[in-house]
Length: 382
Image 1 (cartoon, rainbow, N blue to C red):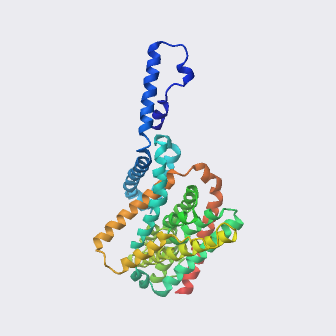
Image 2: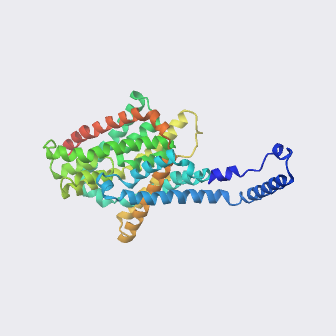
Image 3: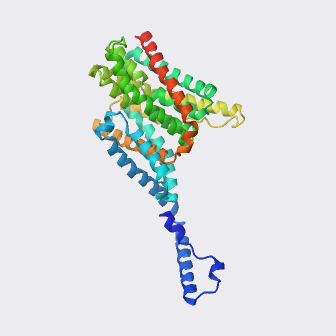
């Protein structure tokens, strides 16, 4: 569409002034008048219309992604719509980007930034205080230890040993520590990271989280995990990346393990709020020490994290009908899928290739920590 528009430009004055027939001159004048009229009318509609078109375009892609992610073959692999969305977005952004009008990019960016934050806030409706209480102190202790340990190891090893930038190291650590792609999405606006950094972090979630779905049941059935049902559920829920991957791994063992694992996993998700708040204070302190902010600068608390907490509390009070909660959750998954798809569209393979091997190395180190270190933590806690 944009290609067609760009070619409809009036002939330059030098060309129009060249010797030509009167019919050609009349045609050139008519084309110039038409272009001028189109240009005069554009400013009144372009800003909001381009944004709306971009958002609707991403929405259509996300709807297709939701259908794709619902295919049995995709569900069996444990790929959430969020993961499928960023993959499809990257494929489109790198191979078919020219088919989308460039002006729609403002709507794509809006989806990847503003809509993302709203969707992360509403993700709090998946959590309740009752769920956290159900796993007791051992489940909570394991969740806290795993999250803090993974974030610390990922940030330090990523920057000091592997030479990654701060944002990439933190995003990769967040994906392994808390809740996979959703955590990467939540950290991205707080860090103000570039889209391709989120994409490489999500890639580690896909690779090692998928591996966990097959490896954990194999280790259990081979007798290498000396844990009872409660402890096994805590181990699976406390160390695997995404909720869907936790369910996929635990369902290959037994229903009781699946129930415990899912609750522990949601406990890890609940830790997203305090982690983001601490991260915001850390970033402010670091900026102040570097002279980047005035002494009285506003504390960069991510409002969507506060919204997440508020909605989690509301969900715990059971004041919203169950059907309404279920509908909002489905809508929120769609909004998160839109955000991931938009991030994929804005990502370039060349950017991923530049940091790819080092990010994967960090993902592998964190995976080894979760697999071995997480097992040790569970044994101590239970």
